[in-house]
Length: 365
Image 1 (cartoon, rainbow, N blue to C red):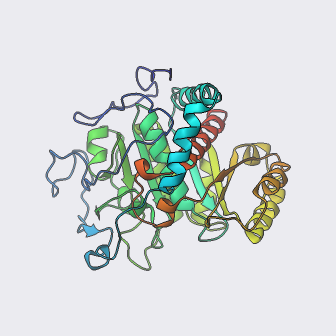
Image 2 (tube, helix red, strand yellow):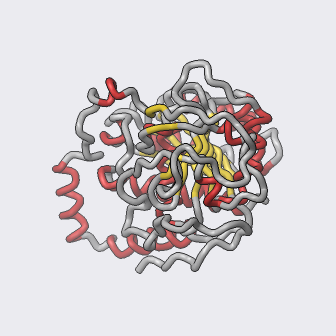
């Protein structure tokens, strides 16, 4: 039996606002809850045009759709992450296999580690050294896993304003306030209910702060990012930051301020070679940098062109934790992530990665 979640957040700060859905404990084997929600303006009872109490006077931006309505029609019906034959074969295997009990026990231990209380908000930065490495996908999977298993609020921050895909992956319908806007708005006297009025509300007591409104040329300067993160940290148990690719300045600042880092790389020869070079360079930095890093190899095709087991061994030789996120048809479609459509192997990998990163974040204050 999976352990029950702890009674509530132990870090200082406001409690969850009225009306926010509380998680009902861990689901049996798959971390995130099913499907995204689509409120764009925080709690439903607050009018979209009103500003939360305590806010500085500021220009109210117009709400923009996360995906152009003309393009939304181009998306197909979401596919399951694995074919029906694979799902049927796994169901038969589970019926006759003697290892099911061990699998359930492992998942219970993972769920328990994800539910550990925090005294201060944990920030986990997700980045990569090149585009197309699945960075936003991994950030979405991690944050959704935390939101499902934990009772305290979870925040997604998009620190990649250059047409980042995190809002699409999370199923946000429209965007208004951005990280740069909120940096000058949030004040210490505000409650969580006030703050969430500037955020995109998601499922499972989670919120999103976009980096832009999908506009080319949007900028996020270091000072704005730092002010926003300092102001928001006390309200959320876990914050997942979708950073720019390294060595961008905001990404470097995010890595320095975070308690753990997730470095994503495609499961290709050049991706692994480049990441290995970066990890070797990180060995010359203070030990907590590489000690707090999790590497995720993302398989972006059904059959990887490299020996992933050997790649994992090579990367682990640098002293870093390494995981493989297997190819998943549902993730490959690039739309909103529905966790009920993910392949079993994807759900399991996402939960393990989230638990590993969270445990590393607990070791640094």
